[in-house]
Image (cartoon, rainbow, N blue to C red):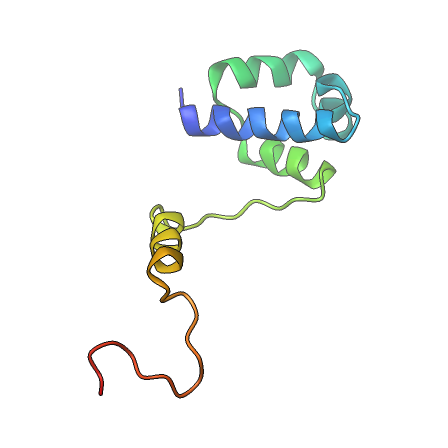
Length: 94
């Protein structure tokens, strides 16, 4: 269904593996079955409550962010405008 949901599940499972948990162990700790998590990962579809439970087991929380915030932050870093020194005028102000 959704590639972004599928990517989230894959990221959670990958993080769990890096922390020494199998996909099945992660699922069990979150109150899911290993088969259910596997199917959700294949479909790219999972209940928000299940996704939150998986994240909780990895000491993460779900959050929605603006779609382009990462790109805007990266551009601000590249252009040097992410941080301003107090009292420094904005561009265009002299």
